[in-house]
Structures are given as C-alpha cells and as structure tokens.
Length: 260
Ligand code: PGA
Image 1 (cartoon, helix red, strand yellow):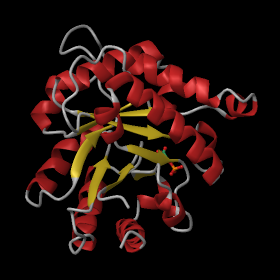
Image 2 (image 1 turned 180 degrees about the vertical axis):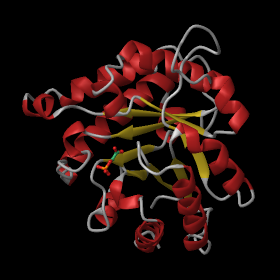
Image 3 (image 1 turned 90 degrees about the horizontal axis):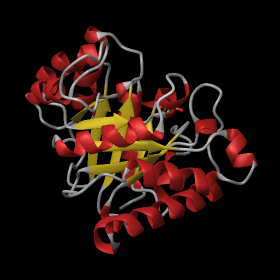
Image 4 (image 1 turned 180 degrees about the horizontal axis):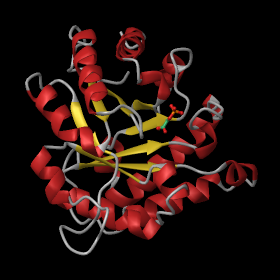
C-alpha cells in the first residue's frame, strides 16, 4: 500500500485574489483533521493571487503553493513572463509546467518545456511536469510514444535531481475539462507504466521509482477512490471538482479512507 499520496488543484484562470484567499482559508479549515504524514495537499492559483495566497497559508503551513507556469530566464526581454526569481520572492513551492492548455492553447513546445523544467529544478522548486496525449494520438495508438517523447525531451537537461524536485502528472488531453471523458483504469495503468519506465531509464531505479506520478483529467468524487486504488497512481491532480474547498477536503478524506 502507498505510504503517502499527493492531492492538488490548479485553479486555472478562475478565482480572483479574494476568492483564492477564502478558498484557501476554507480548505485549510476543512482539511485541518487530515493527517499530513499521509497526504501532501497543494494549490496552484493564478499568478496575481500568489502573494495573498502565500500570506494566508504561510501562517498555517499546511498547503503547498504552486505557480501555473514560469519563464526559464531570470530576467530580460520577455514581456508578459514571470521569472523564477519572482516566484522565489513570493515563496512558491511548486511550478506547474506543460499543462495541456499551455501546450495546446498557447503553443508551448517540448523544447520550451525542457528549458522550464531545468530552470525550475535549478531554482529549487518542485517541477510538476504535465504530460498527456491528444484524443487523436490515443486513437492512432501512439499515446505511449507521445508520453515518452514529452518526458524524454522535458527531462533531458536535468543534471542533478534532488529528492522532491520532480513530480509528473499524466493528464490525457481528452480527459481534461468540461468536455473531457474520465480515463478508464486500463488507460491509466498502461500509460502510467510507460511513464514510470521512462523515469527509471532516465534517473535509475531507485530515484526513478520514487518520483510521484499523479493522474489528472475529470477526477471527481465518483472516480477518485478507484483511481487512487491503482498501484501506479501516487496522487490526483484535480481541476473543477476541487474548486469547492469542502468538496475537495471530502474527496481527500474519501481517498485516505480506502488507504487505511
Ligand atoms: P479537470 O481539469 O479536472 O477539470 O478535468 C484537470 C486539469 O486540467 O488538471
């Protein structure tokens, strides 16, 4: 059985500053009884909410804070971008990199993602690298190859990987969002197996097996337990179903229940 799981959410372009603060306060209260030696809880709000979010959870220290993206450079002519130094100043723990909306709506490439992962790791953040195939790629039977390519490129430049410096989220594009179809256990097992193989090849057995691999894409209270039960799943990366703090805390309780 797993010793520790990871449960987190990215609020995407939702929740303004005030809403983020009240969400975090509610989540902190609703999750007060949850044993943190068994679960790491994280929240990734909008950039503009980060300072207020940090101030609100710094006092409690029970929820890790993440940013939704980051530029690989520290400073310079990169209008509209956020530097790793700025995120360090705010006190961010995690940087999410390569979410499918970044790749597909904003055209981020594997090469840019590689630079971001390297920079995030070198700046002492946990890089949360998101990978996933499109529906069309799944239909063509090339999902595993797509994941391998995304991971091999994304992780190519990491020289030294400290414990906790890398998490991976498998988020099939066809499973994400309002129109997403939750993935079947068969897909999750197969693709997480592939991801683990690449991690072990890249970082060696010991290190590669310890990197947390999360599943994301239409996770909800109805499927969370089934997903966490799967041996390959180390955690859940939740969108819409986590944006109500009480419901998210209840989901965390429900997955911990089956781990007892
Ligand atoms: P969803 O989002 O749970 O709303 O499908 C998942 C994600 O984008 O990480």
